[in-house]
Length: 101
Image (tube, rainbow, N blue to C red):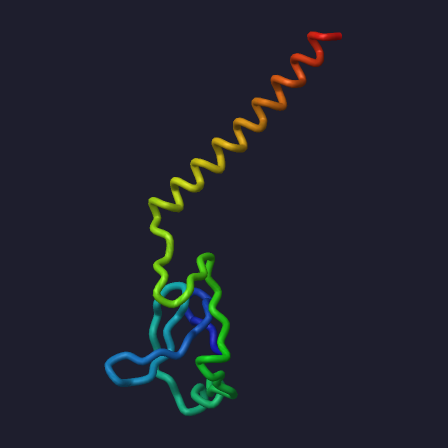
C-alpha cells in the first residue's frame, strides 16, 4: 500500500482516461501506477455478485419501492410524538401520585 507524498493519505488505484493511476483518498493527488505498485494492489480473490452482502438501512422485496424521504420523516415525527406522550403520561401519573400523598 502506498501513501500520498503530500498529505499521507492512502493511494487508491483508479482508472482515468483508460490509464491506471494512483489517487489519494484525502487530497486527490494523482501519480502514475508502476508495475511494482500494480503487484501490490492486485486482486487476490473476487466474490461472485450473488454472494455479496448488501448493507443498507432499508431492505425491500423486488418490485417494492423503498420508503421515500418524506415517509421516513413522517414516521420519525410520529415516533417522537409517541415517546413524548409516554413521557408526559409518566410525569402526570407521578404528579397525581405525589398529590395523593
